[in-house]
Length: 323
Image 1 (cartoon, one colour):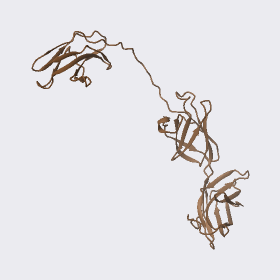
Image 2: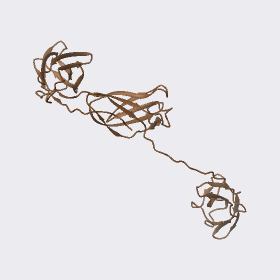
Image 3: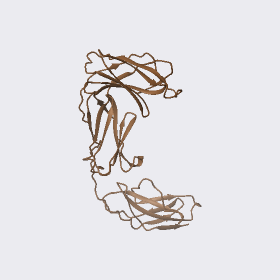
């Protein structure tokens, strides 16, 4: 269901931890400055592709960036940064400026009068992942207007205007293995508009390479067969007699190819519906309705045949018993 091509290159960049960062609120104006030193060593042997480290310090729309060379797999930079809380990240690039490694953004507190030395753990840079949803042979392809792509605990939504527009999305994911599924929806992402809840699968994202995922909904073959059942006629010549045990009903057999038995219904009041007296169809052509001597004064009865597939036929004409 998923087709992707990838080659695996195992590379790792590690910066040595000297001082841990902490997240707290601003205590000084933006104009106050303090030094921040970022230094480290690329620990993977033969890392000749990496030539430059880009250190990015950011808060909102304010960005400070420093570029330093990577020599013998090592780099170091000291920046003058306004006092306060900033997000710091490092990118390692090759000669063409392509990012090969990146760190997670870390919140760092810059304090007045103190030099901060920061360590960041770098990992392979995010790869572009192109997800294309193939609905060509899907039964609901004309009404599936939305898709929700789940990657582990995160999801990404895709919306199209009409059924001729493809459902696709380009993501950026750090190389590694992920749990992946796609849900399809009609006109909204409400649970009532979900067509397919999707099946979880495992995908692998390679390093420094674009990955294409062609996904199609999981379907299975359904064989449908059937036959036409003719309506079952009502039993004829229904009669009743009574004695101390109750009311005894008899009727003629219904001529039909698929009779399972007969149901008997009783109604003690016109304000109530007829009640089924036997939950299992009787095979015989008679039925005894037992009740207490002083319990009922008047009862209406009907009889109906039932097929093996559970279809109840026409009711007989009602017969009334009175005490």
